[in-house]
Image 1 (cartoon, rainbow, N blue to C red):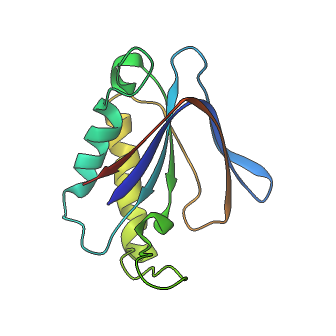
Image 2: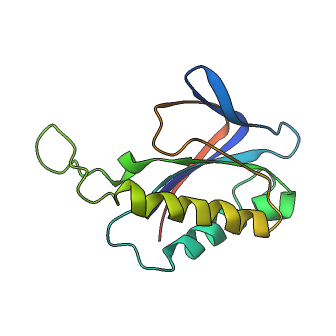
Image 3: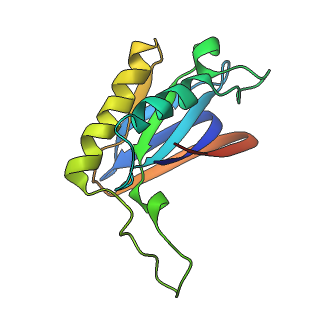
Length: 144
């Protein structure tokens, strides 16, 4: 499992011109979490990802989303699993199929909510338009 976590002051995701998830967090900051699920992920990899998204101290003042009460916009991003070592066309063979990945993304969202974090989400499998205002800019990659 891989994620790109970006510190944002606002972020949104739209499908067919309709906003399906948005966070506006100018005071606390927030996190845009793009998460890709892999074929070979351990059964508990989603728990590690929840912990990392909630606890990494990447917001202003070196606090975590959990500490700051900051929101998270969670977007499934299978393309993070793309392999680009050979040729000019990425290989998606490392990405988990939708029927495997979708419930894992749902577990991540539920796990963050159980920690008291406000979570907005994209729409799994849809063509999404993601917008964000990065703060810093500050972006990290996470693997579990």
